[in-house]
Image (cartoon, rainbow, N blue to C red; front, side):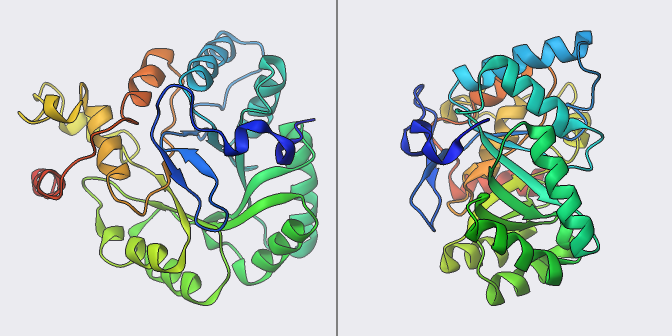
Length: 289
């Protein structure tokens, strides 16, 4: 079992110089580059893809990563993650973020028990209400689990621009530690209201869909990076897209998913200074508008 609350990693800076941001509610520093599991971890245990994921996680943790986001409805990804963490001895290094995606208290309780079993732990770091599903019932339940010491943080998630107004409304009215939302060069709307609101309220932010589910790579196929990319320490489009997300000061960690070790190593390179200037960010928004 991963006794996460006692982990020496909780207040340690990333060993490789990976940039960190503090969780406002506690001051805990988290590396700005994390990992997702949707799609990439939906594999069969023991398969060639599974063994490749073990290499991905080795690169992730050795590169200073900690935050991994999963869910009980990602096609068994949480079970694969739990097995990999146990086999690699990485539970104590990992900041586990998972979710509740249920329509009743009873379903949520059963799902939570299953999540702990799948992740091979007795507690997690962050428990999120998935895409605001039944949040009026599930958020109080998550807060109860926090009071019981089963999760250290509580949050809500969404992945579409259309959900951001409701996310903002909940941020204004509910005690939250985290939100998770979409934010990218071709979907920068969160920066207008929601990200500044989280800064004002002292809420940490995880960013999903920084690559727009891979569609951004199709748009830049055979296209050269901007002339200023090298000056910003950027060597690939993936690094540029990730650095755009973390250049907003409200963003705590971005969580791109990958099943390839080479891409994992490339993504980690985005988590270093310098950040993009306001002018560079605006140029990217115009380029992908």
